[in-house]
Image (cartoon, rainbow, N blue to C red; front, side, top):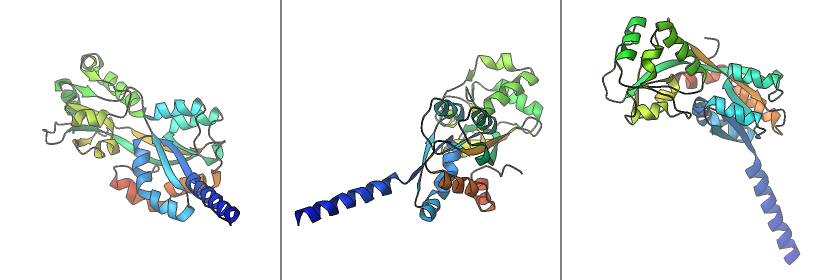
Length: 250
């Protein structure tokens, strides 16, 4: 009887461990988590795999992949994913663009919204701001640095610019640590204390494209491909739009 009970207990523990191990580990930035949090419960019900999203600035997640950290799926900026494919860190045949986001300007909720409707208005707003904040690393950072150079205001902004290493731009604006913040629009919408002024003027706008691909070492490649297919499906478009994003081809 004791032997039977012990065997049953081991079986229960083993089954429990197997259930707990049915996870899909996803590397990405905040925009990835915003979408996965929405579709995760339905995906788990359909596949039996719980989605676990690990987030940081996309450039940081790229370095974590390069260092050999284990994961199943990565959703990074397109050029970062392409670099990792060349390095053999992502499977080329699994690559798929899944969403894109434009860059916006944020203020603290309730603060007056400055004029950014034209290139000249945007330029004057940047010059008049007491402080601005945008990421140290990232697709939006590269573009903003080039915009400021083109507008001839890079030097004027240097002394009042804050560039955090983490995805804290919207939080810093919400907390009053910076007057204006610039980052992809969904990031702004995700922070209650921050408010979107609007996107950059069309002449200055750049859309950051997010690309998904699978780790060659993933033991869950079939399920990972299901997730990428789901992210690229027409059914996901309302979720993207609700969070300030767009399908990659629009």
